[in-house]
Amino acid sequence: MKIIVCYPMKSLAKTYMPETSEVLVAETPVEFFRYVQLYQPDAAVLFSEMFSSPVWEWLPRAKEALPEGTPLIVVPLYRDEALIGRVTEEIGLTGMYALSAKLSQEEIRDQISHILGFVKGIQPTRAGEGKGVVYSLMSYGSSGITTFCINYPLVLARQNPEKRIAVLDMNEAKPDLTRFFKLQKHQLALFRPDFLDMSTAKKRNWRKVCKQSVHVPNLYYAHAANKWRSSEIANMMAAFRDQFDFVYVDWGYCFPESEALQHMLYSADRNLLFVRADPFSIENAREWIRVWSQRGVTCEVLLSHMDKGEPFRIGEDISVYGVVPRISEGRLMQSHRSSSVLVEEFFPPKPYMLSLKQIAEAEYYEKSAVLS
Image 1 (cartoon, rainbow, N blue to C red):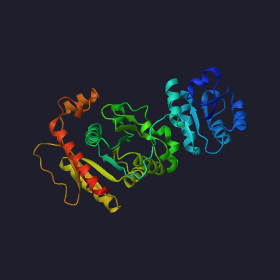
Image 2: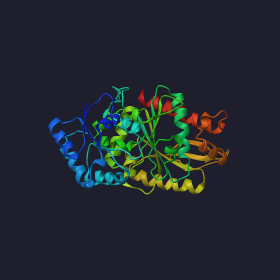
Image 3: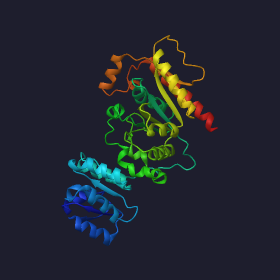
Image 4: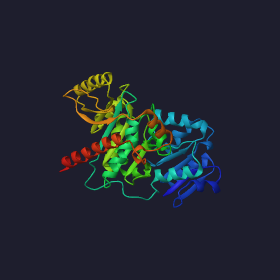
């Protein structure tokens, strides 16, 4: 692959690039535009420190100069990062990837390698499959979604070692899952241009973008919180459904009811509303599910924080996906502070562990029945 890089020092520029790439370094913006015209590169990498003119002038001009469909990667300075993001958003530049200004030299090289496909791995698509199930997980808050996403996918992955499972943190207001698993370097927003087109989204190997679990090899995590457009969400879910058997999306709060949330509800195969097992929460859940049912969306309930022997009545017309018992606040706080997965602890909470296993077993038999 031929790459043109705009960087002030030729000797250093190549240290940012994938080892097997052919790199031509332009040491001035004028030289960059001349090289683009002469050599028609397969990709271009621009360091924003090279440009003295405003971002809204040089960035669209650089993208326009490249052959159609050529990826453009921008490595920003701290002062330019937010503005580059705004210009890209407002002008609607396609095929333009903006890295974070916080990355080290090695991290920049790794991300450029990911974007341009230099990282070798399994082929992304699976012939004859693509039947993965997408679950959107929502709540009114403090209903245990993060704890569920930390623990349940691991139980499901152990019981189904032949299945690939992805967990996406889309909770923009409270990305606790990202903090727990340290997913800051595994952000899907970096690959946002890929989601503008479904065929492009399906070409990338998303397992290489995600963070693989240290406990089981078939479980992956990624930070996916962003202000996504409806079409981007649809293409993202289609791509992940194609490459994974189970996709759990921690959306978080089911309010405000934005266009993105509505599209998530329509895009998911199953919508799970996490509800605390108390009368007020159950009543609010019934009303929310009734409203969305009138719009053609089916939602199931996962009751959380259930005390031993506590009865619950949620209504015959509402489907209950599962029930998980209460875990003491002290136990949860200790787990989150130490980044310890409860189900991996030497003495996991038995009632909680049992409830997750029952949900996983029911999930397995239900999907097996559907596929047969």
